[in-house]
Image (cartoon, rainbow, N blue to C red; front, side, top):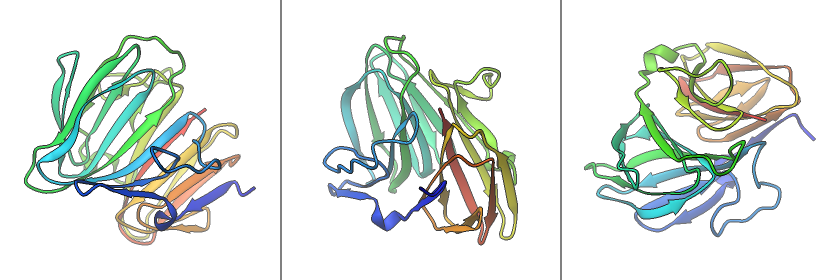
Length: 236
């Protein structure tokens, strides 16, 4: 088995409901592939296009860490705990579903919203639910890996969203020809998606919104063939 597997965007699971056009990196809803049930603690990575003035009506979740990363437009959140917020492009929200939470997410904008919805399995079940969001200006991640959310010891703080999992969400932006490296731990699982450009990952080519599944490597070297944004989940 290759330690680095490129999963082309065109080969992902697909569904189009008119208001929602989505691609599934892992088995979800009516898309089932027994070889793609998750990657470490990462269970879901959905690539969603949401029509303007539409969205997900109230629905429940439990015992899941749900990360939303907005690529274009904005998404507005409201939940049963009384939390409300608008998360714009480049920013992140994390909902820890815990013992149970009901939420709605709507695109209240006059343009389509594009986002990743990522689910990570928590370390423990039955925890108290919570929600939070942070703005992450892209300039802070230029040529540099930045931790957006984490449940790992030593990586929490006012500038990092909290998760109830031994996992973290990283982001970076690269100019054409720029290279960024990351030391890896052999028994952890890394899943990266380039946004808006093409990269070489340890010599393998990945295009816009392809999935890059990595494990068993000591180091990851990513070179931008064109300007690109990177999003990665690192989990046990």
